[in-house]
Length: 167
Image (cartoon, rainbow, N blue to C red; front, side, top):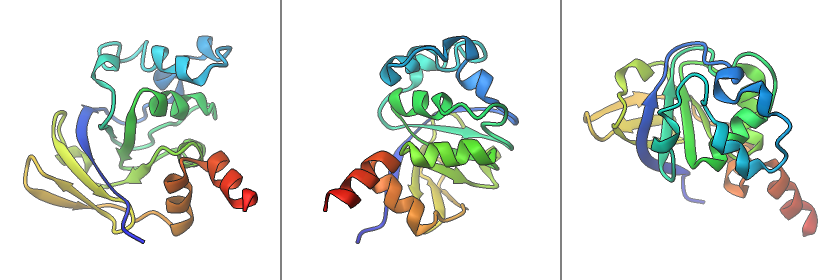
C-alpha cells in the first residue's frame, strides 16, 4: 500500500483554543443537510476565511483546536467546504475523533507557528512529516495510527463500515 500523502495550500493560520462555536455556530445546528453546513463555517470569528476554502485547503492552528462542545458539525462543515486537513499543536479529544470518523485528517504538529497562510504543504500522514515546500523546511508531526489511516482512505467511518460489511 502506498503512503497517504496530502498536498495543498494553507488557507489560514489560526491561533490557540479555536472552539467549535467559532468553527460552526450553534444557531445552525438545526441544518440537517451536511453540504449546506459549510455556508456557516467560521461565520462569527473568521467571516473572510470561507471564500479561501476549497479543494486543497489546509487549516493550521495552535493548541486545543476544536475545544468546546462535541458537535460533529464543526468537522463536517470543514470537510464539505473542501478543507483536506487540519494541522494543530493539539486537538480537543472529541473533535479529533469526530474529524477522523468523518474523513478529515487531523494532524498533530508541534511547530505550526512556523507555517504561514499561503504556504504550500506536503503532509505524510503515515510517516509523520510535514514538508513546507514554500519555506523549504520539514517539520515532524505525529504519524496517524494505521486504523485512522484506514478510515481516512475509506472517506470516514460510515464508508469504511459499509465497505467492510458489504464483503
